[in-house]
Length: 358
Image 1 (cartoon, rainbow, N blue to C red):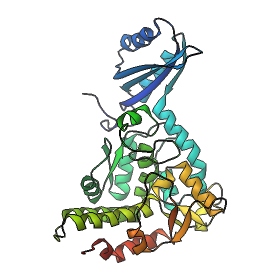
Image 2 (tube, rainbow, N blue to C red; image 1 turned 90 degrees about the horizontal axis):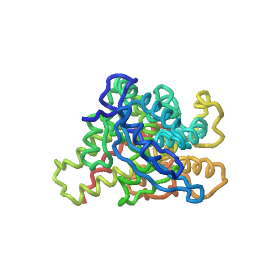
Image 3 (tube, rainbow, N blue to C red; image 1 turned 30 degrees about the vertical axis):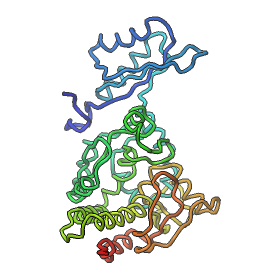
Image 4 (cartoon, rainbow, N blue to C red; image 1 turned 90 degrees about the vertical axis):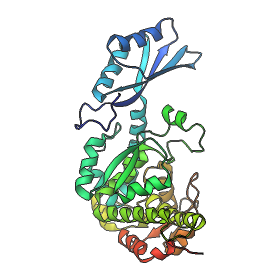
C-alpha cells in the first residue's frame, strides 16, 4: 500500500504524491526513454499523459504522477534532464505553491493581522513546496491541542463541524490550477485560478487557516463554532429539518463574513511585525482573503480609494448572520471588526441568533 505524507514520523523521507511535467521534442522513442528511466531505476509511475503543446516547435508535454520523497523526486528531475531531447522538468504542484506564496507574501506581510503574522512565522511552512504535515501538526497540537486531519476533498457539513468540535482541522492535499484539481472537480462549479481561493485547496487550508490555530484564543473560538454547528445539526431541541437548515445557514454566514472574509481595523501596533507599515485603515484576517492575491489586493485598493468595487461595513452581528454570500466571485463587502477580541465576544453574546425557532 502506498504511503501518504501523513504516515511518516519524521520530516525527511516522507513519501507523498508528486506531479512532474516533462517538455520533450516530438521524436520517436522519447516517451520510451522517459518511461525506461523510471522502470530502470525502480521508480513507480501512477499515471502518465502525453499532449502536444507547441505544434510548430514540435514539442510535447509528458505529465507523470508518482510517489516518493522530495529527495527522490528531485533526483528523478535531475536524471530526466540528462535525457536528450528533454527541455524542461517541473514538479508542477510545488511550482504552483511557490508562485502563490511568492505573489502573496509581500501583501500579507504589510496587510495581514497580527494573529496571522505571528502564527505563520512560528510554523515551518515552506515557500517553494507543499508543507510537511508531520512538521506542522505537532507544533499546533502542542500550542492549542488542535490536530490537522488529511481529507480527500469536500466534507459534509456534519463531518466538518464534528471534526471542529473535536479540535481537528481538515486539510486537503490538492492545489488549485493543478491537473489533479481540474480532473477531480471537472464536473463541479469551482472557480479555479491562482488569484481566487477555491475550496478545497491546500494553500487555503495550510497557508491561510492553519497559522491562526497557533493562537489559543482563536483556536478556542473556532472550537466553539464547531461545537455550535454540531449541536445545531444534532437537533436535540427538535426544531425539524427546515429550521436546522436555516440556523446552520446563519452560522455559515457568520463564518463566511468573519474567519473566511473578515477585515479588522488597523492596529498600528502590528507594524512592529511588518517589513513595511500598513498604509490603510484595515487589516485582513479572513482566510479566504489571505489565500487569494486578487481578494487581498481588492481590499487594499478599496481601502485606499483606488477602487469602489467593495464597501467596508461596521460589524453588526445580526446583519452578518442574515447576509447571504456569493462564494464564486470577489466579495462586494467586508464586515469590519474593531479587534479579534470583540468578534469573539459578539459570538458568545449572541448565541440566540443561531437558534431561530420560527
